[in-house]
Image 1 (cartoon, one colour):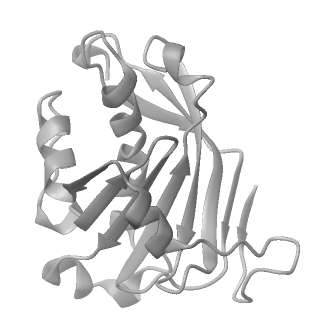
Image 2 (cartoon, helix red, strand yellow; image 1 turned 30 degrees about the vertical axis):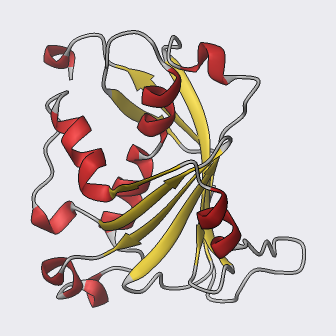
Length: 178
């Protein structure tokens, strides 16, 4: 289901995130560039246009990332309702969950499907992406061939502005198979 709606979240969907609280509770803070360094190790390379800038805050059961557009990407902001940099970079965030809890070798994952996507407004030049990790599931998370995550997007005030629910991705056994 794809739904684009210019109205802010309805009362049923309204979800305010305390961004400063999550930043403060984070166990680890890393730069987005560090995430790109890790995915380059599995031959996934991003050029300047598709690389988000910003910080990632990793908590016990969540990942919060402040995603910002590069100067090059900002030049094309009016060409997209949601800039592809935000969608691409946020789908890489679950790899941090894998790296944090996986004890095996690194493998690439490729997106397969999305159950539901909704955008309430244009995301602008920066956005917060939020993933809730299920602590009960993390022990086996990296050993699965398919994982499923929900990603929510918030503005600077912590107001929900969009989400991807049920993003499933498949482990690639060999890069030659892509």
